Amino acid sequence: MHHSAIPRLLFASALLLGAGVAAAVTSDRLAAQAPRQAAAEPPPDKAERQSQPGKSEQAIVLLVNDEPITAYEIQQRANFLALQTGAGMGAELKAKAEARWAQIIKDPKINDRLHALMRERKVASQEQAQAVQKEFAMKLQHDMIEQLQRESRAAMMPKLRKEAQEELIEERLKLQEAKRGGIEITDEDVQRMLKTLADRNKMTQEQFAQHIKGMGVDISTMKERTRAQAAWREVVRRKFSSQISITNRDVDRMISATANETGADTVELQVQKITLPTPGKLDQAALAKRYAEADGLRQRLDGCTAMAGLAKEAGARFEDMKYIKPSTISEPTRSMLLNARDGDVLPPATVAAGIEIYAVCGRRSIKADEKERERAQEELAQKEYEIMAKRQLRDLRQDAHIEYR
Image (cartoon, rainbow, N blue to C red; front, side, top):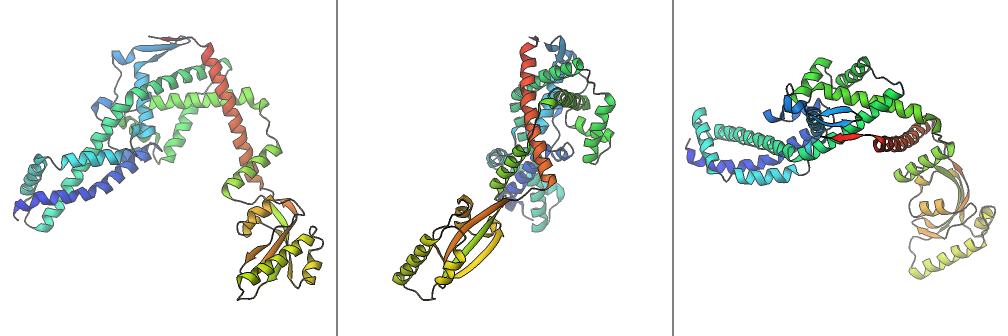
């Protein structure tokens, strides 16, 4: 095969960029969800890998009530936060990758490398050339995405270190408060919690620890974070459980608010309806006359008691719809029925079958099942706990002696 055709083929490989970037973005997002899923992301470079801490890493950066936090702990926690957040990648990755790819394909050395690979593979046909060219382009893209991720991690590290430092300060305060309250989360407790996480990711605990280490985070970082979270949950539960009071009315309000957001029914309406039929072919004047008749009939209605009798007098069709769910009625009638008071009669509405007049005779609440009520109660209680926990942590921090070195 004549290799002069090869450089032009490379430009077609730019079409592969979308799929390559999409895969990288997906991998990056998954990394924030579960440690096992983060394996799809390229491993960090040597500068990001952590081995045994050296002297500089063992240096004490600050004291929280005389308890030290080292540079190594901060870096490890920053690495962990980078895995959780994807280190700022995701939405920006595609635009950065497209710009970087545009630079790559303009580099004449890239075509020289492709030529060399073609000669090495002894390409003899157009099909072989296309296969090698696709492989070459995908490798370029993989390396490019890997480099972008390293750059993004490096750019995010100052911010992540600050977040890591703040998180570690709060953890020290939480564990100190737990100790004062006689709360201890043992190593065995922590192991059980990490085993649950490993099981969820279909790994043994040893595999999980190695996987985390391969991502630049020592398992001890996860252990201490898990210990602090568990201890703080127990502190908050013991300290504030007696102050949490969720009433049935609170639960009803939450279920109702959730239903309004989702469009679900929280009440059933007792509805009656009168329909004045209209002929198939009716001009505007005749329709207006019929509408006026319907409105006149409505003026004579006083709630639901006279509906059936007046419908018979007017030669209209009466229907007692009993209790219905509002969602079975189309808009805008649905909203008008919900907003009406018991005994109200709605203005006439023209529909395909004729002119309809609705009346709301009553309503009754739809009771949520016990599981739904339990979920609502737990969510409300959790919100109360979170408010009290934040207030408690703020007070602990105000009273703490924090010495920066």
